Image 1: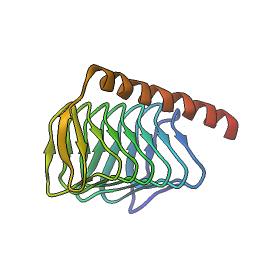
Image 2: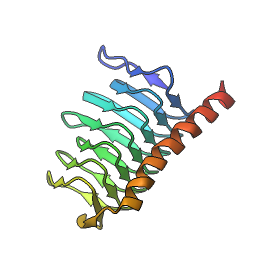
Image 3: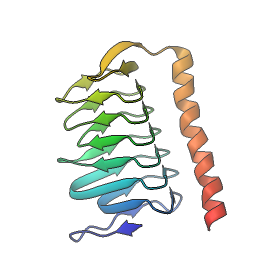
Image 4: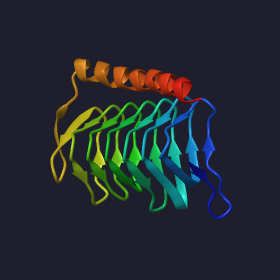
Length: 168
């Protein structure tokens, strides 16, 4: 469901798949070929949320903002993740159940493992594997990891097209 708030209407590219039960509220911009899955909530009532192209916001994820929340191109945000006022660099996977809080910046091509907590304005360098609560960089990503990041984005673009066809 797309809901205007305080004079701001979400801008969702026509190619985006928005699943039934998802809520997109206020000053939200979603780029081409992205997907917003069942029961996800993107609520931009105090500042903008910007989702790049080919991003997947998976089931039950919540995205809110402090000043803003930016998710760059080709990112996968796993089921039940919470993102609040952070920036996620392109080609990054945020694992299921992870929480990323205000002023955290995650570099490009990172994997944030399931149930990881990032807080306190931490900055994660590009190509990092981050695990734990609180999250810590455990190693640099391998070439195999980087290939998986690209496949994740492409997989959800295709799934989104399939679901869009089924539900239209």
